[in-house]
Length: 266
Image (cartoon, rainbow, N blue to C red; front, side):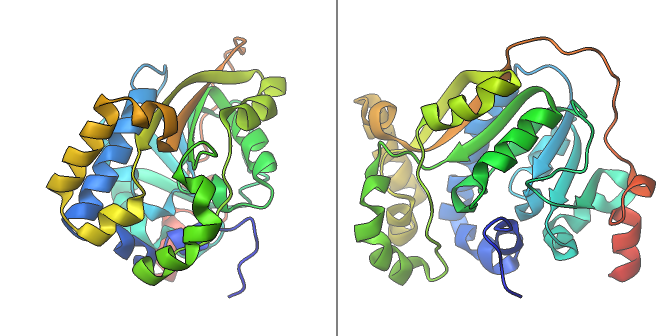
């Protein structure tokens, strides 16, 4: 299948991509990611969450354990493969649709989360505007920062490719890039957390999560992570109240590809 520049979730939803986070180091990386997301999430009102491109399943289980009502949307049916265990008994829902033209009403969800997505999209502004449109209270996303070692990405890419095998080119951002895009939609910067100072590829290479945690704690302690850490998990919050529309996310009978239809085609 040929991937367009707005369907990066087709790759991140595969078992091959999940292999990048296999083993103790991968678990540590994902735990750090969840801690950052949880920092942004825990004070948000509401429990209806849309995971845009969430077929990687990196957050779905933790969200469900914390009592959230989760809907994931992916570009194609196969993007649900890794979250099928969560689809059983309607624990969460999955819909197929465009990530840059979401098939939901305005303010249909309390919170929209887009992780491991925006840096690989051509029309990231469209995805972000749609996330802002359907989010009642907040949007939480991540991105590689311009102000980090990612600035050397063009020099380090071949080395990173050699170590990781299936790495991809990506776009770096500033918080202002994203804030400017969302302000016309009454969402603005609320909080952020820089995850790592050292490149993630280095942690994967040394395969010693205890050492990685020690090094990152040292970087955080002396302020390097605060200045140059990446990727950044960013929270954009609603700047103007919206009317209580009581809009529920679509159930399985309302969308063409859902828990029921996926079960039939499995």
